[in-house]
Picture 1 (cartoon, rainbow, N blue to C red):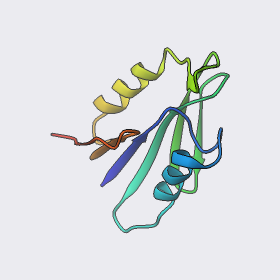
Picture 2: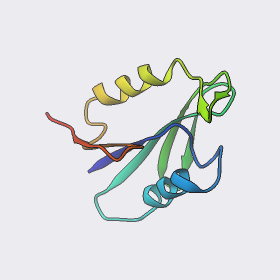
Picture 3: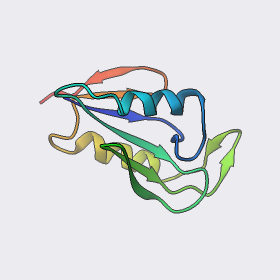
Length: 103
């Protein structure tokens, strides 16, 4: 099973809170479960990283407004992740809505 965690920022950009919980979940070692993270940078170009064995995709951002990254490419990256075949079985967003991918 592959799980995609989507949130506004990543633990590589900010420490504590929800990003830290996502880091803990993605680095847990459970048999047959892999995780990935889709988040935005606080400022700068997008990039791909890895945390342990979990891939992290960070979309580019122009900066933040009210603690939210201004990242026009984030919705498109989310759609690409959603439409990628065989990429994930569960989608978990920051408001904890869980969606099972259908075949």
